[in-house]
Image (cartoon, rainbow, N blue to C red; front, side):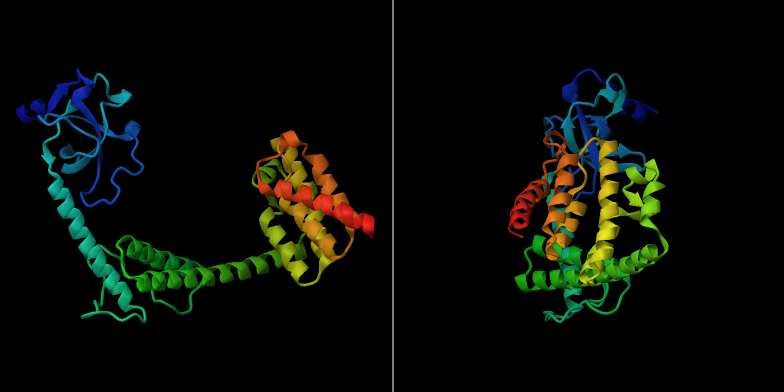
Length: 330
């Protein structure tokens, strides 16, 4: 009890108090996402004045643990409370040693990652990752959408770390290429799944009826008939690529009306992407009058004071000018 009492002091001067974060000594960016509001206040009992970035040992819930000073003084929530004192300072050499040890292990993990590729591996290639590191997935092969995403993220971690540690350009680019190949496989699988899902939805749903039944929750969630509006737009683009322009326009016209209703609810401009898609299809069909009409409809629906800062708005206005020129020549 005597030791515990000596660790408690009444906060009388903000200069004797620091707000810290519990971090491992080998953390690369220990003050990332640090917020004094959610930090821990302790007394600084040492003769050396504290500075942000100083390390010490604090009496944590599970025993003594390293902390880093994130701010001088205490958060408002700690004022008037009795605070514990930090136990001892941690010299910078100890921090540097911990980080050097961590970096050494990271290099071993990257050597292991290298051994899974076609890159030459100097010396004996490690057959498994060092302790504390996850094994890497294969560099290539078949995988479903979720696995491909998982594999891509794992190799992206290797790519980022190799660049951070200054490994060879050949290695960095190899890891990046492997990651991007997995992400490409993921995107292709995702696109196929979305195409199948939207084709099924389009075959079983009357979009105009769905638009009339659309709830406020659907409007807020940017949904139509249970599907995201962006997926309906992608479906319209698939129809356009397949040469089914009438069907594509039928979808886009409903999306334009849905966007107008969302704009009425939000007080902003209707999303321009649907109007742009309709204009592209009309231009392709050389129906310049229809292109002018759909662009003017968007322009009327969003006076300048309601428009956002995006480049799409200016792009539509420029397209409208060109469409009017083409309509006059036709």
